[in-house]
Length: 434
Image 1 (cartoon, rainbow, N blue to C red):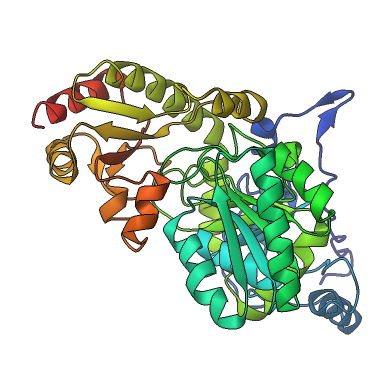
Image 2 (tube, one colour):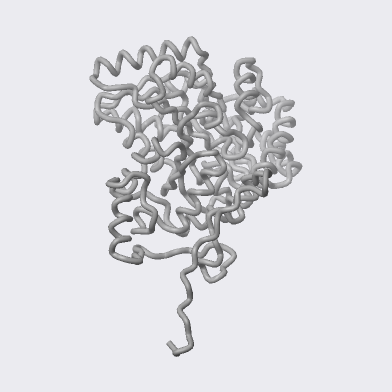
């Protein structure tokens, strides 16, 4: 260093701007820069991908302090970067932005939606405990509770998605008695709303009121909000404590990544974070970076897909070969409509199409599609169609599928952002083959 050169002072991150005076900024605006200061990364407008396994500490004392947060010796979590199994810049920026969408205190990202769900269950449940869950659930979620957690002494009680307050009171009383007989507690109420693949809604407010009366607030309510989140529903506003996503779906939105998340109060996120630190399963830096890209357009993509779905379903409803639609914009049941009116901002773009006939007719329709792709998953820019009874829910016992309405003539459709007229033409020619 030359004699007249002076060291560059350490650059500190700029304060995060979330409002302009009395005007709070919307999530759509915050997705463009929340949690990231370009001046800390050579002025790069977008966050770089931080491909590193470990991070250099400013000092030994800082290293000790960071590890105290990671290991839980000091409450509140770490305030520094340590090791990529625990945290990283891309993941931290992503988690901050995910929390913004749902109004959560904290969010945690994972390598898949099922990793997020499994770590959540394992972090909050112990031997002898009971999980209460709505039905149907995504088959892998239901299977993990019924077949895997049962090996470790965790049992479950389930109820139909559309249950009213009286049914909820009864199922919680049963779960409470079951937990007492096993020497445990009711550890969690786990919901999926809308349910996969029927689109049945759960009354989160009624679940909260029943939980408060029977169990108190020490039993968290977690909800898989993948079908409507983050745009069309905010479950934390209606009584849920934890919101779960397969980020693979609408948040990722381009069918090019796999990831998941959970979000909620620190009270619930801390044990989940601690187990993730031990097990791994955090989203990798590149996936987190891609999700940051996707969050910038999530409102635009979901809005367009929702508009397309409304037009497509209006056309399908009048078709003679369509037996019915499980679409939230056309709810026949008054109780379900009441839940929708209180909990949902939009009808979404994923729905169930019931074709007159059975598996053979459903397969003919699926095989005839030209624009829509025959594939599982949902929430991408392209339209997808699948047959849950023989694909995503194949492992569910036949009698349970029948009870939950997962029939052979049910085709799940996820509408994308193509031209709605083109999609209608595609469905018209495919239904002609049935």
